Image 1 (cartoon, rainbow, N blue to C red):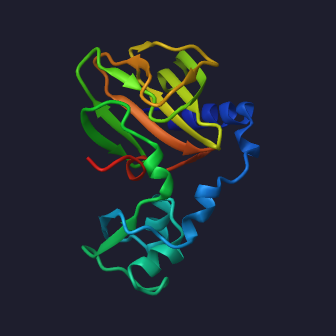
Image 2: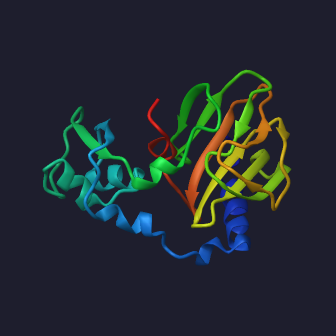
Length: 203
């Protein structure tokens, strides 16, 4: 998506207006540094990556990631090395908003999902509609759902919006549909993008 600086500025202003900047730290997020789960996936190390950078991209504490993989937090990584990534506990709370061909966005840590025109896009988790507009700068037709614990999910490049601001949604409720463009979907904790793919169920 183009106009990244404008999107970030718009989103920061939006979240401040929602009061997210002052949101308390989620107990779930705070617990990530405790005993990790045994469920997860693997990450193959690319050249130049560090343990801190990989842990940060998945929303994990670097010490937790090191402990799970039985390596020192300062140990150098080798390109091609596989690291086990424990799934954050909050991953069980989100579902895919639509089924289709998935791509990733390194700039925002979001995902794009291409599906047939007319496909319904559903709330990935229960919450309140914070934004429902056809003209969010840099995003186009967009719905933002506030999950009331600091987390928000963003559904951009929609063709049509089916909900209104303030509406209460249950997980799985249709909130829009797609046209010819792929859905851009993000999960954020306040102004911080999370690794969206890591918080969705493994296909």
